[in-house]
Image 1: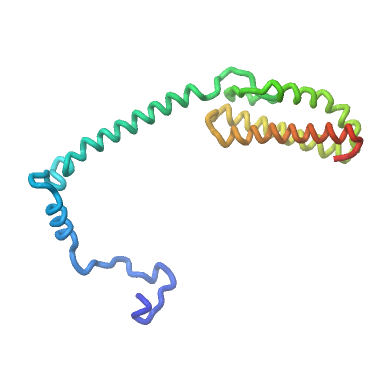
Image 2: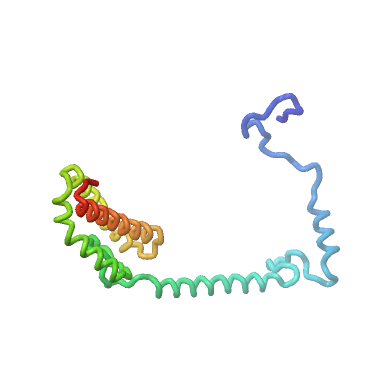
Length: 190
């Protein structure tokens, strides 16, 4: 029903299920296609499924090119993915049974991380008890997140989202360690 007939349409259920066109358009479309095609062209669709103007071979060629592109992409992707037995960045190891994933680790990051971890005990001792509890809780949460992400990446090493989350987690850990170092040096809380 339409508004013109006196009833308004409030939901899709108010619309009719099918509307037949007032006339069949296909004979006119076919006549225009036949008029536009060059003389002696193949029929629109033959019994064998080939199309006018030799387009079927082009479709097969396009499909073959797509399959070849996919194969090359898979081949390149396999050579770029991390290896299976390289050491992990950071100090957290994956769960047993998870594939170890190789991470290109920056020597400067490792050096700074190691220095901050070595001074962490002294820095924590200089913090007030409430701040110390917050820092230890934050670091425990970050280490658990790193463990879970590395385990998940061991199962799906090509997952870009997991890789980004892991990098963000490493950055979060460095922020916490840097804040603790700065707060402990200044003798103030976090």
